[in-house]
Length: 386
Image (cartoon, rainbow, N blue to C red; front, side, top):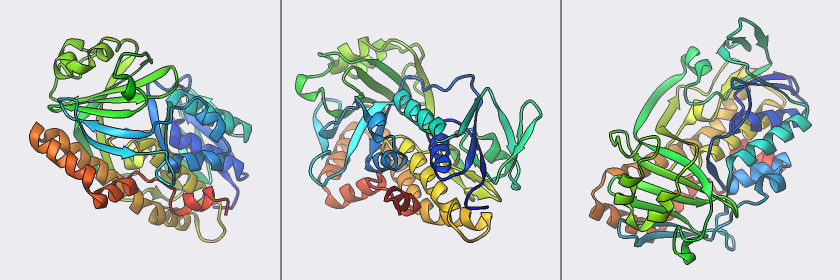
């Protein structure tokens, strides 16, 4: 693997596009393959912690990506009686930074930066397999070869599965319906409108996330076995029963929505020869820390920095990248998975546990470390411009 070369990237999500921008800016020729006929993000907002903001700065897209973003002052957890049991201050002093934006805006910023840097983006292009020698085969029978192949094709990655890299794939007991709606006064109390709030009731959660001055991202989390909770179109009556204090918000949940089960993914290795796997294809996690996108972008930036360094074989560079980046991302995955176990607790003990989490400095530090409030490893080096 030369310090400059050609990359074939499969998947035009956050990880694939970040890798495309970072590699193209470092002098590589890059081609991105997206199986859909257009690149778009469906009805969702996204949490961007400090590590993601540093990636934006490194790629030169910070101002464009965060234009119009919502910047709150606290994240709160509420019990079934709408009582605050945990509050984490953010965006103040030297504390953690967090902004929330509409995913479509971020995808647009990454696409623009990739094209500006010279990357080619091909839509309607479905990759079906990759070989360790850097050869990618497509559904139409054609093939291409790169000095690097990036498999960023999601949790159901065909490239990863074809290479036999899966160590453990767990379909979690929960999932979420995601909806993006116009933001209006009256959905919550006036003093709560700028906050990020996670409401609990039984085994259900509602995540309230302002994503811009005019848009509100809502996630309805429930168990796989909760047929009414995961119904599409949304069964508003059943959600009103669980969250009567959110009646006006729930009544407004119209428009495009989908329900997805959460997954947890671990691989035996993040690479095979010249093929690197990243994003949900490598380290899918339940979204309880809001770090799925941040992990993908940070890991992609770290990958670009690792493969463009001098010395070592292609496999050596990819192994070094994984050795540096994987421990922190695994900590994030596992902490997020443990947070998901709160759903199974009865109301009273869960409230007690969450209150303890809110008071414990040690747990708070571990949680913020898991939320990766700054880049690590190669990504940190790249973000610093070194």
